Image 1 (tube, helix red, strand yellow):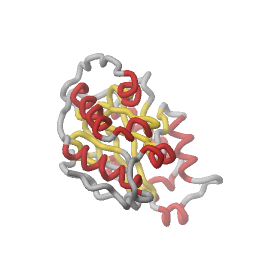
Image 2 (cartoon, rainbow, N blue to C red):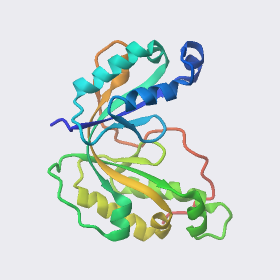
Image 3 (cartoon, rainbow, N blue to C red):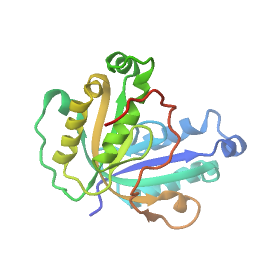
Image 4 (tube, helix red, strand yellow):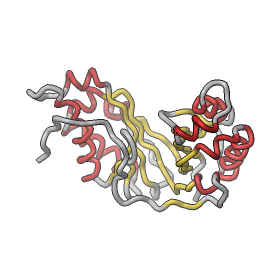
Length: 236
């Protein structure tokens, strides 16, 4: 069953932007203004989610892209990656870890879960216990290893997805175990959410002129550019 909301992630080719962009500000700001006027909310980087109070069907989502390409002809020439992902209910991980709140049971047990979090670097450098300077920069590596051992894959930056369908209580149990193993995680956490996710569409194929296709769920972490972590602690 199609989930009610959609997440849209894209990337632009910088050289193409310099060549084809015809606006007066910058391409990313123009796209942000357009998507926000069409019931999408900006998350981080080039990621957007449809508002929680509306039903965003694929027909409506792709219709929004059609309108954006009509308004910004340069978008089709500059985009180099684009996906739509079905998303459902979101849960506040930070509140759960801090207050131990009771979870309302989800009506969907057959969805994968997506984690996004943000750590405060100042708090992390203060809370991370190590005698080595800058060892706190290895925190993300420890988190990645832990999450991969517990059924998640790394997607981008501080983002993870479960490989298979996972009940929300099990996903939250993973997060609770993470903060018990690494207390600095909760102490340095600025924000974190777990979201139900469904099928992912290759929106780039649609934008470039062919029909959108369903993207298979990845079975391993994506090899994306990451910050230069060093001094990471060994994991036993």
